Length: 248
Ligand SMILES: NC(=O)c1ccc[n+]([C@@H]2O[C@H](COP(=O)([O-])OP(=O)(O)OC[C@H]3O[C@@H](n4cnc5c(N)ncnc54)[C@H](OP(=O)(O)O)[C@@H]3O)[C@@H](O)[C@H]2O)c1
Image 1 (spheres, rainbow, N blue to C red):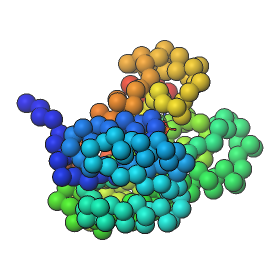
Image 2: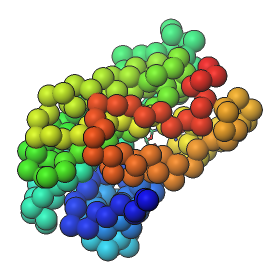
Image 3: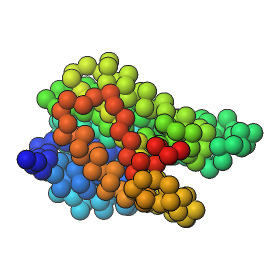
């Protein structure tokens, strides 16, 4: 028998949650009863309205690559609720450079993508760990990508950054302490503002993947909710791609 996940009295932070996967997941976690911290770097009005709309939520503006953001986010959580049970590291950036165009990749692209996707993810996790360790069910979910597990993706720095976060996931699962569960979800192509205009890729996925469609943000949220309820799962990357990675 399955029961709905009950997150009453739980506090969960979702980085990059004013759009796409992060926004849908923030809404789904709130619907399960959680208090939610919404974050984005630029879209402050969307963040403030989402926090206003959810039953118990707070918006914290800040680019996760800025070390001050991790401190501000965790400080705001501590002031408001005095606890943190879950962290979803969802915020990320890319730069569009075809994977075969190795000469076109610049140091500035590497720096920006790694500083947000890898270092930012680490900094927010590091700042959150003391509160997560105090929870009786502390967890982290990192949103990575099929680009980190197959030779695909919007650019080489992006693909490498997502592979790095998958490995960070295993290291934190092993060393974070406090019985914190740390897992990653690696989506295939998801219909969000990020992939607006990617019609050729959408058609390719529909033709190639065993499940013959791209993902909706809810498909990724379903996997995250499943992981939150899986109390014996840690150190894993769950690929949510309709089977695409079996074919490429
Ligand atoms: N869509 C896909 O096909 C796909 C596939 C695989 C993996 N993913 C991963 O899924 C996650 C979400 O992607 P999405 O498609 O939902 O993207 P999205 O709709 O573009 O949303 C991205 C969110 O992250 C925020 N954000 C961006 N840079 C940030 C930063 N430096 N600091 C804090 N917040 C930041 C954005 O707000 P602001 O821009 O206002 O800051 C927005 O709220 C990412 O980790 C992405 O790599 C997506």
